[in-house]
Length: 84
Image (cartoon, rainbow, N blue to C red):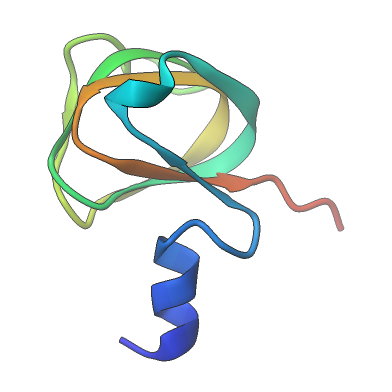
């Protein structure tokens, strides 16, 4: 992993780090990436069937349109939508 990738995972360059301490976080994201195995408390997105009680494994990324996220355990990075 290069330095740029490390900074991206740390939440820089348009990313938002989300843990259980954040509560429910709203925004406009195009991808979520699990830094550790993460249990979702809630998720508002265009992905049918993804929500409370689902687990995302460490290292997995999910692309979609996410507007609200909260987790019960683990850490996610949510990447901001980029308009072209």
